[in-house]
Amino acid sequence: MAFLPLRSVPLSGSVGSLYDEWLSWLGEELDQPGCDRNELCRSVLTDLYFPGLKSEAVHGTQAVLLAQMDPRNVTLEPEYYQEIDTEKYAAAKPLLWLWEMFDRSPVGENVELGVRFRRILAKKVFARCGKNFKAFPFVRLSFGYNLSVGDGVVVHRHVLLDDRGGITIGNGSSISDFANVYSHTHDIVDGRIVYTPETVIGSGVRITYHATILAGTHVADDSMVGAGSILTRDTRAHWVHVGVPARPVKEKSAEERAAKAPPTPDPLAE
Image (cartoon, rainbow, N blue to C red; front, side, top):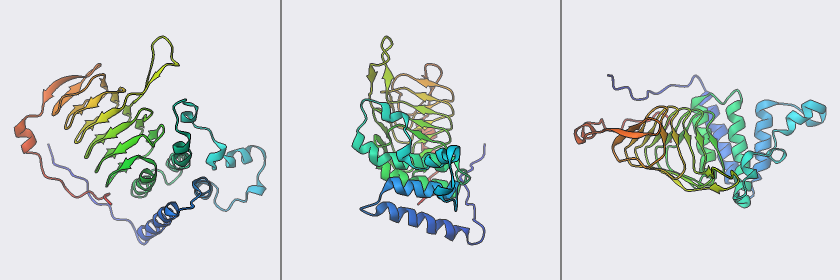
């Protein structure tokens, strides 16, 4: 078994300065008291997908496609939920749409640019976003504003964070590719009856590949949910939980925890 912390990846030429300049511009625009987030989203997405295009030059199907660059022309699933806070969602929606459409664009798979871009948006959308948050492509959120994230949290590709009832994620936790974290569930007789208990993920937690965390569960500090598992009840601190439903199968011993290597520098840190 090898100890393999992340390594730094240098950018070629002046592209690092190019990225810095663009991200600084985006952050400054969002910090403006009178920032029109809808218009900012429309402008950025139009430049990403249709650079140099004049809107009056397109008609029919092309005009419909161009209209999708403006979040005011789009409806998203959370807008149909009865419990939505319309004021909070109105502020979050343009940035959620910008996030999703950025990921689908040619720049979306660029790790260096994408992690920093999503971090800027997360700080404007989440209830709380700690230092060094990292989100990889195709993370999906529900409301966004019911998500509270600590320091050093990592969310990998194609993760669903359903924050309808609220999700809290503690410091240093990691959610692996294709995992799902829910904070709502439906009545088994009448699906229109919806329960929205908060889901809490503690600090130092690992939610691994394709795992599902059901609404209202508490994932205790330093516990792990194994690949493909479905968590239906609270975990025990320092224990590994696997299966459908997930059950505790192994405790990380005090000796193992004490022998853990100290933190190493993160090349994607702020």
